[in-house]
Length: 456
Image 1: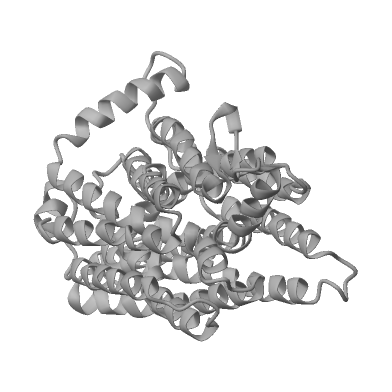
Image 2 (image 1 turned 180 degrees about the horizontal axis):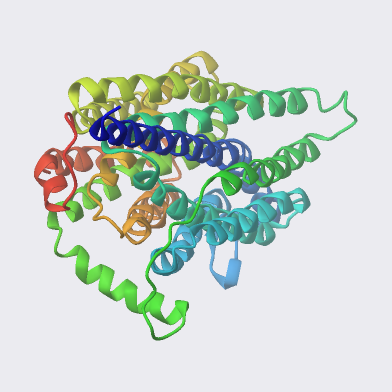
């Protein structure tokens, strides 16, 4: 064998080992979505909204108001305001966590801390009963903020564990894993909730068990990514400790992002349209139960339908992105979102079949729009700044998604109509569509110093 042939063989072997190591990390990475998505599905989307609203109503005065911190809040809007409060807390912490992760290279310990804080708070929802609306609001703030922090670190691994041409597929598979777990646990929740009498449980006790089980699931399956993902070594600068340097790095990051105006343009578009997505996710069950007068079991089946179709939707939209590019595919999904909300405004009350049709429409676009937005942004991040930039992304994903719930809550507070509240969210998708359409994505990838995929 010639020297050149031997060198090529060694290079091929090294590439094979690198690919195998990358696949191992990717498989572990998928399982964090599998772990934490149960919280988003069972807790935030299905059970907590109606249950916390009922708890708040039990504690309300004769005029229907509760008074957290002395502030009069209509009981029906309390859950929406609590969601807003949780993401405001997250937005104050996420940039520091992202800067610390990039500076130290130690994403895993930070991911573990955020994951298990959120899982513990979620498991603690078992004790939410009676008129303990303040406890429910506090646990929601802690769990939701912890999820946001963990997603900063989780998403920051995507550019490190996948090549540019793999990212749409890897990101879509991660979302598919999450929706698969959400569907599986919802089936178990449905069995428990529907058969609570045969298990010797009250309806409220069954709901509290479903809430707590999401925390146990989150904590149990988070072990897999924490074992398979690996931290990358970084060169540490001499000076202050990690926290102080983290704040200094945050200021540097904010200044640095001004050098990439096209990346910021994408973030602005994403901030707006994703605000609408997150609000629909968190408020759909309240709309179904309070405005459409649907039973809890109907809501569970509808969300289960969303989970099943979201798996297919995420994988299908991932394939569409290969042919048409992520940007065009996302734009198509935003148009579908706006049409879906418009249809939701006209849904008749007490007719589950139409609510199921709406759920099917949401499921087909939900997973793909989220997965492709994440993979598209990963191309716009300068190398070595993944966690810092994904903290800004997560602020758009969850940390700044308090505006939608606030608009939803204020609209209901002013009009007393959940229909008016749901239709108010169309503006987020319409404006996001216009802003994203104006972003020259190929030039944005080049400006960030990254290789441009064949389709983007």
